[in-house]
Image (cartoon, rainbow, N blue to C red; front, top):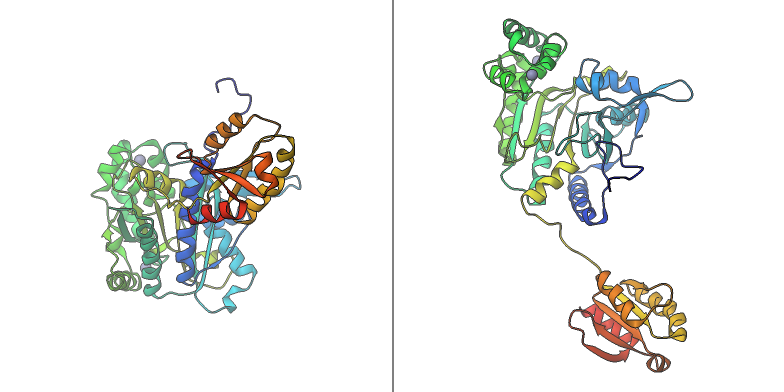
Length: 421
Ligand SMILES: [Zn+2]
Ligand SMILES: [Zn+2]
């Protein structure tokens, strides 16, 4: 291990076969729910013109300032690896004239996103998100439906004791006054802020509220609350969201320090937190982005979305002792006992696979003992041993690997016994 010439880059990981069932479980659950809520799949490029994210996510955000993978391609264009999905999906919405479709347009996607962050538990430089977006509708009912979808998703995975946190951060009309109130509150305290927050105070004061440094966290408790600065429209909208959430029966907790790290959010923001807060970051979150599509050059178009981090969900599933449902196909090992049956193995393995089981065998030319050891190592439930004599009569030795019991039966009989389990 120590002297490997190449290792995966810091902040990336390999998803090994033994972890794949978690990924499949999460993806299938997320896709299944997306479909019954009327979402359709979209896929957008892993890289786009950097300007899309700078405009979309926001010049002043930490993501753009510090975390985006940005590079010039060989043609001299400035590109970026996607740090999130929403900006790319809104670009696709505009590019393909999706405003002509029935609204809201509901889209889901999944895949890797990239942020040059400090790697730690549940935080990677290449990580994976499942993402839902609903574009073209202002009704707070839609906010509640998206939040309901997010909540049911974690519920369906079997996760317990999660908290849904909710806030409204206003819009272009009311947020400037709120930002100013935050700056006014923090300016006299600036010496006690962490260096990141000193930096953010003028360009992005909302982010001071969710800084986890102990002194910043303590100071943010008494900071002005966005809900006290909402204009009439934002206040009514937020009341509407809470009313609809009540109808959906989704429990939530108001958190005035919840702001999310992206500039495009307006009005509703929400996050789903694991039981032990602080231990790791949110499992997922989202919010409304009513100004984003206009920012990207389209007509004013409201939208709301939700993204959840796959790696964090896997950590939490393991933490809570939840295993993905097993649905393993039986592994059937076909063993030969001499040259003639070794050649016949190809046909028998073919029959096993055609029957829908995992058909495996040894390569090379190995003793029966060595083959059965391999069968054990591969987790075979059954072995079909081809004895010269039996095989000529169309029969095989059917071995139950768990008990070691053996019986000579026809190949058809062996396959039907495996099917019965
Ligand atoms: Zn801070
Ligand atoms: Zn407002």
